[in-house]
Image 1 (spheres, rainbow, N blue to C red):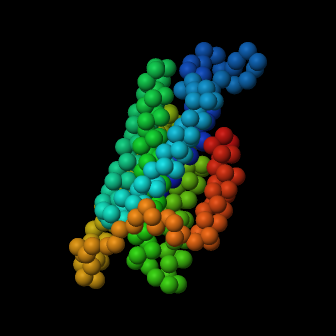
Image 2 (cartoon, rainbow, N blue to C red):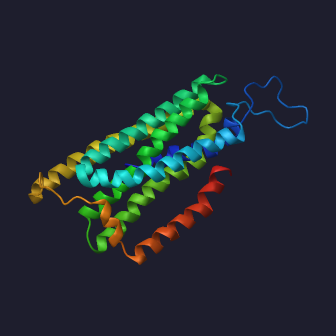
Image 3 (cartoon, rainbow, N blue to C red):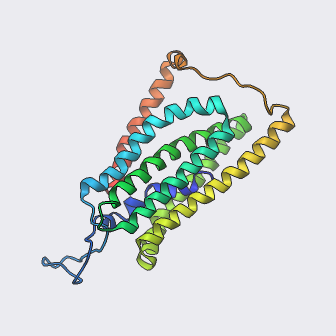
Length: 246
């Protein structure tokens, strides 16, 4: 459940694209060309795409540094820090929706997406690291499958439920609902940290110093690893841009 809420929040702009780019006010139910007037935040297509661009660039840069940070300070520190960033980022993003029609809307929402991007990708790294430590052999694939399934369940529920929730309760409450799900992830982080500490004590590993990764370690990564990285990169290139502007 660590990343359930963050995966839900990630694609909320995609589901609500019409509302994000909708008119600030709708005097009549239809415009002059007989198309339906959708009331929203009044973003331009460029401003809307910035919500995804700033997330992607931040995510791409921060996750590398996050990997070194997690290796140095441990899983518990990482899971608290990055789940908190998801809560903070999604909350600032939701707060921005209250400044509809003002110059503060876009800066607040971009700041929220920047912080959210800093936390979400890094939180996935911590989740995978914890999973890889506590599950071995034939259990590992099933454990990874279950964590990914719960994460993607957040995305699925977003696509099925967010539009209906927004129609009934409005944009502001919908975005705050996403923030609340990120709080659920933070509570899960507390639970994971407690269980991890108890388990490490039982194994007699609590307080042991682990070998830290170094920047020069990148040089020894195999060609097979870099081919896998390229495969994932091209997969994301072919899927996520179309979801953002669906």
